[in-house]
Image 1 (cartoon, rainbow, N blue to C red):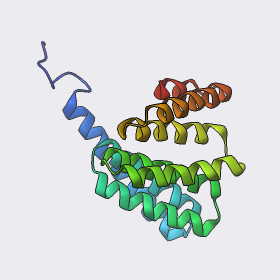
Image 2 (cartoon, rainbow, N blue to C red):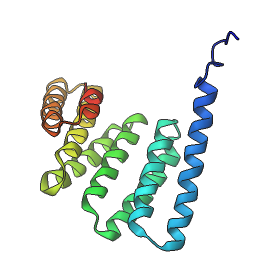
Image 3 (spheres, helix red, strand yellow):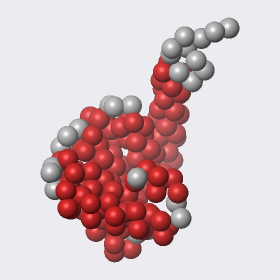
Length: 166
């Protein structure tokens, strides 16, 4: 059988279905975690849900879930997970064209990562900051952020993050 555009296995329709199933699973997991009152998992799952919503272009919903995740993780004292959510909020604001908000979240995240967090997180924050600088015409700052990001990410050995930063 010959398939047309959008009909191939994993085409746009298939991807939307998969995203819908993934969102449903995360929402179900969130309900269970709320019943168990497991704050750390609630925050982490909300963060995953925010990432999925961001990837599907639902930025207002993504922002709301990321803020809820950040609030929950802050109450738990989970600093590295908080920093990850700040990066995510920065990326959401970047996608929404809100450069100043994006910059603030990313600078805050970088501070957490520099204090005690993993270099992968700091590299991710720097990469997103590079995007903010590039979009606001700050070419030298963007170049510096991208170079520093790549150096940090190469040290971690996380090839996936290195490729994303390129």
